[in-house]
Image 1 (cartoon, rainbow, N blue to C red):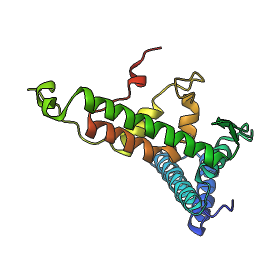
Image 2: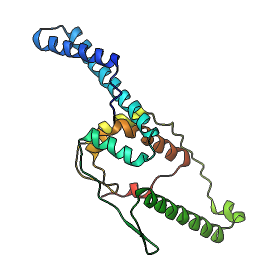
Image 3: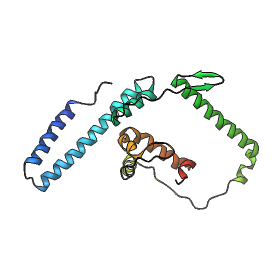
Image 4: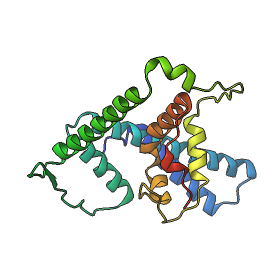
Length: 206
């Protein structure tokens, strides 16, 4: 993958930041100057993060195997060069090794489960009885959609631990890949608020 995020503007800003840091180490600066260098550093890091996101989006959109490309990007940012183990699936006495076909099999399986559950619900709870089954709630809570800044702040406040939950993803890895995960995380949070649905697995306390 070609690194296209290093623009002339970023190179210019990087050189200026290096000069400012050198001046900070070798000169007794005023509080105002130190504050300026600190803010400049924060802005530079934000620009780099945005450039990484744009580059990753461009690469993912231009590839056919988006899952594989996404894993490569995460491994590159985290310094993890380990190759993922080969996965095989036995479906109706047929061994499948193609990752795309395996993913499609899993997708079809879970879609069929949902349709079966919906059909069972319709049989046991006819449409005409739904109104009597649903209890009215006199108290309603309104929640505003979360923003990317709010989610980033919450994740950064988490402790850097190597322990994992049901998703087998440690906190430090989420922080390292935050620039790639923030958009889907914000979307998931807001969809949860809009639908009033919260995953049961996240309600468990370990």
